[in-house]
Amino acid sequence: MHIQEGNRNEVEKSVQWSALHTHYQSERKVEALLSAKGFETFLPTYESIRRWKDRTKKISEALFPGYLFIAGVSERRLQVVTTPGVCAIVCVAGTPATIPGHEIEAIRKCVSDPGKVAPHPFLRGGDSVQVQSGPLAGVAGTLVRMKDSLRLVVSVEILGRAAAVEIDANCVRRTNWGRLSNTGQVSGTGSAA
View 1 (cartoon, one colour):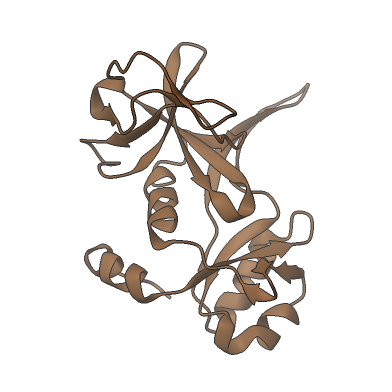
View 2 (cartoon, rainbow, N blue to C red):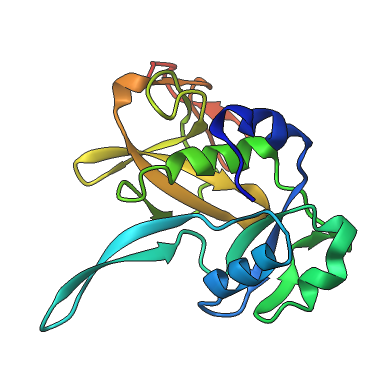
């Protein structure tokens, strides 16, 4: 199902997104099968460079290996779980876990340029920031330094997964004044990012 960009925000608020766990490297197959059944799906991908002895190739891979997102799973659970390649619906207390719409929209914005996004280890602490300008305006995440660049890490809490996208530090502002320690105490100087 294709949604025009202008209407996406209104639709995102009314759509209940959930996550599916798939068999190893079956994300694309499951997405195609569920789309054929009329489900709205979202498989975030990124581009990576693979090098072999004789060649180098750019390939598209699942940003969250083994997972994809699906809308409206509650009404048609049986059709979903009987789809070849589906391991399970990600649930909390037996009910499909709802992925907040702002997390789905943040991932959509990050993968709009698949060459700049990459998987990232899930983070619990760090400096929380919100993007103030550019194509990722409004997206909140964690700012981290990787080699000689800064990246915005966007998390999907229920999956314990995250993605990182390259960002200019001038486009973000800190949303908290320090880092949370393991004890929950705020530490730091309170300087802006």
